[in-house]
Image (tube, rainbow, N blue to C red; front, side, top):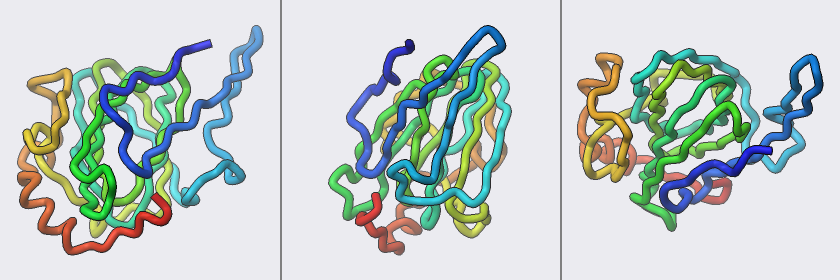
Length: 186
């Protein structure tokens, strides 16, 4: 049995983690990583898989209308979170969670919670979204903006050009503040 995920700070309002159970035998194992009858606040309609090389950092991004649900299938990552919803009890709180394939946990991230993924080793991430991916719902800020309050374990990650040149958190907040988040469902 594996231990619970390591949380560096308090969890963000509406973000949940679900411990997943693996059933193994001499052939391998089976792990259910999502069921619609679990207490979900969303239903993924698109599933994606990313592979990331060591030192890759994806984000920091925020979605205004859709939820993300993610599971590390192979490898390890740091999940950085910062609550950008002004009407949330955890507004501007941040945390980093350590996720690894040996500790199967599904994480749900509501709209308005900024998130970034840092991969210290080769990693496979599977994630579902509650609305089809659209560039119109993809916003971001610079991964190491001090106002995010994230203490990544990397100083020079491998980034996409759009993440390397992303604006400040203050600039991102101009877009986020124009959106009214319902906290009823997270």
